[in-house]
Image: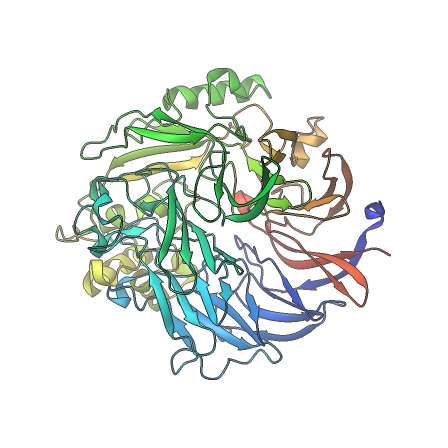
Length: 638
């Protein structure tokens, strides 16, 4: 193989990186033109052979104010580029970057908040992952807040020429629809989540669209949503022409652990009894793979039901059992025990042991409570948003995995503070990775910008226009600027829950390294014909630990791989060592690695221009405290 001679062919600096920004765009290349997005959500086109910018479109008009937004690319179809900025779905001319005529409303975009049956000003909706085209429709899933108030996660199909809504599927079923009885009777009016934030997958020949959903909001306390909560945590197949349900498979009932499906379903073909069977493979945050018949949803490997611990917080009721696949074997460890705690140094072990004992978790599915638990594998996987890569020649599925515990502690929600009631579960009183810190926010945003963010939301942040009203929003804004404590929240707010999380963070030792024994990240090859694990290796390193002689620890990793016919598995993803690597796909041997200007926490793309093959990766960084970047780097043979 000549992969070891790869070298940088070109770079493109978006000049849009900022502290804490991320860039997870997977580039699309068509007819020698590369289309992607910057950390500030500019859409742009490059000459794919040189990296020269051809055009750029800024949906903010140069007025991007943050915070970070995670979008994973664009859709290019029939001379148009479709992409999302907050609640606006744009269509651009692929040659000029100008807004496409006749698309959406008079301003040239589709409002993702409309058509959900609720007041638009009370909703926060975006699309972190690009949609998919079927015939003359663009089918999209959305990102919605994981705290309340939240929007429902309806799957929608828009006319590619006009932006008109063609069909919609309610992931929180309305009265008379299948699954309505798995929620409280009125939940469809106020419940949120159950959204396909990781995108949709289309089988063009069958005319079917597949998606996998997240948990219902609020993630960790479900007294307002008693029941199994279809179609949350489900794999769903629809008729792509009409949006009607063909089949569904719920992987987790009444989720209380934020263990939503982290990636879109992957279309695969496997061998059963010597015959090819079309299927969908779905990875999970818990490190499992569900393999389902593409036409019927039937399981292609055996599974079993296991009893679950009962709910601990008053008012909530957990499902009495959940099912788990028996094959393939999990690609992540399943239960954190004391003998798995780090022994990197005596001090690190003591720190980990103290936290472990302060958050007793006798069962991997111990429900959230006020004492605290450690979710393992963590809420960032196991599997993550990059999804797996599938080799149709061998039937092998390649998936990278995180192995980091997350600490979760629940407390009663304050009734004397608007900030405590509505903001603290994401922004802290203590540090949390859910949302940016609000310390010093008044130096970054104006009063008007703060008010707008609270009123309209920012993607994963709820919109509080309806829930709070103008006077309470003004009080919150004043508190963020001056520290003047807002007054008691109104008790009539319908989304008010008794509990919120107070601690939600990665389980780390006293020096900031994972508090369990390595590997902290792995790369795995799973044979979907037999369920056998072909190989599994540590994936990623911490440069500071390498200098101390501690290598091959693995690290957290975000972004997927591409697999080639000539024997390569190519992936970046690792958070701290800023590398892109090529492996021998058959045995997992490292063949080449290149150094990136920042972590490539997305999936690379490979393409041909004038007979020359390139590999390109977005280097955005910014995950879990890593430095942010804004560079695209393309590699090619000399």
